[in-house]
Image (tube, rainbow, N blue to C red; front, side, top):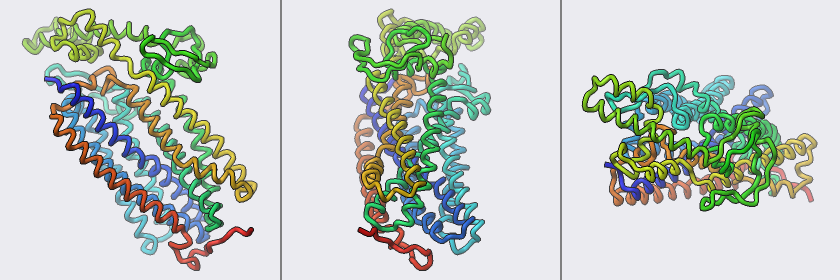
Length: 522
């Protein structure tokens, strides 16, 4: 028996909110870990104490963020068993492997070196501590890698097949899962976004110090490192985002069409819509401004292949649903007689579309007796919320280009030693601090919301993956999460603000680290 629709909606809301909240901490962890490695490497080479101070100070803020990330991340994995039991049962053989490796290899690697990083400054040599810092950065990246391998498989399932004896997806090629093109593209794009977040954090806090006229030598060097690294990372985000767009065009055509508000198939090469207003009621996008050819080049890497519109993709979904009905009928036959070779051949011929047959269970529990109207409803269910995807994608992309400009100006001013002469720019940097998080959250909305109605693209509809829970259970757990995460948010903000306001000059002995709090003259 399928869970009620309100249970499914609340389960999705709970997981979505906890995932978005957890992802507030992930990008900063990724970015700061690399910046710590860069700063300590400079200290190791130059032996200048100020670089040690920089590493230790930004390391304190990094440690606060890591603790919050761990506390919020553990609950996500438990939800696969509590809120998404059928999903875990159906694809656990595939999805569980990268999650287990992430916990055993990456998480413990990161956790081990976090402790040595903070408590090993006076206990191990400079070279050994530098290795620890880079291993900490590697652990953070490995953790992201395995999570994104798991998520990439949900976006583009490979290396697994449906076993009609066990009624589960079973792994047959782990190599394909690890080196899934979609997973690898998501990984490099996501960690690059994390590098931008870490760079913006260091840049903004350093600009705050300069505006206050304190820790000037510290802030200038921090801004130079953050500007250079942030510029490189923001350029990588755009390039790697283009690669993600191409792979999405290959594997998730409906997501591309929804992101572009493209209802009709455009002649090749398709134009890119810069701005417009999608209307789900009339199946049109109004008041559009387009760049000729650009979408075709991004999504197909050619000038000859079309980018299919939503209406044509819905027609394709109808055909796949009918194929899925045949697969479902064959599956029912095999449950009664596992030795029926004819039914097995029908199942094998239509296996890739069995998930589309499952879409009908939302309207008719007896899939093979679904009416044409129900097939049509299920086909339109493959269209995600176009308005939401259209605008979240543009917010993300707009932020990406803004970061290139901001880091470019910061890098230029730092090279020319003119940062102190442009207070308007320092204020601009400070107020830009939330934007990387906004872009990252919008990116996850595009990736995850754009996959709907699938929890595993083309294989398992979201409404089938949820546990059969009561609304009372869900409201209690959701309320608990809200209280717990609100408390964590208060602690995080309090600690971050406290140590930012204190600054390195008040946290470390100025004589030991050769850094004196400075005041701007005039």
